[in-house]
Amino acid sequence: MSARRDAVVTAARGWIGTPYRHQAACRCAGCDCLGLVRGVWREVMGNEPERPPAYSMDWSEPAREEALWAAALRHLRVRPVTAETPGDVILFRMRAGAVAKHLGIVTRAGRRARFVHAYSGHGVVESALSAPWRRRIVARFAFPEEG
Image 1 (tube, rainbow, N blue to C red):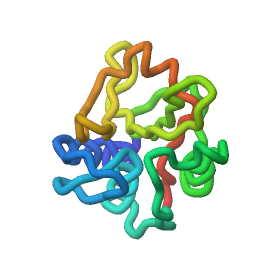
Image 2: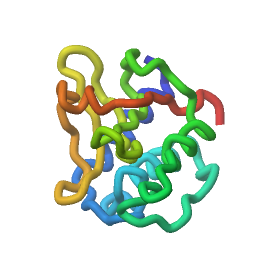
Image 3: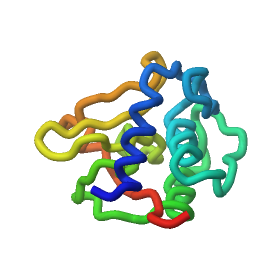
Image 4: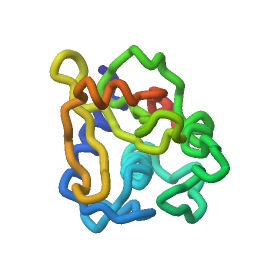
């Protein structure tokens, strides 16, 4: 695994225990799933390449717009959905027919794969990347190696 990927995993695990706060991106104080990825970006890469606009809990659903996916395509490297490497950013579609709008960071690959993510009612946790979670993955990305 590359030094960049190691740094992403270490940074993501450093956010575990951060409370869930919609639109926030501050380790220990609060974040949502996008805020987790933004915070890890700042720790590993430096300044964020863009700041998201204010968004609601149903962000991009009324317009059926894949806003989160589009943003990931602008700043992260696309990886094959079936490839699995620690440090990957994974994008989930939580319901069939809904826009993809949940993110996580893979911390362990293989049979006992795990990922760090933030979600309402739980905060930032490390979870097993179980079959129900895997079925929801629609895209996989990696942080750029340069930057």
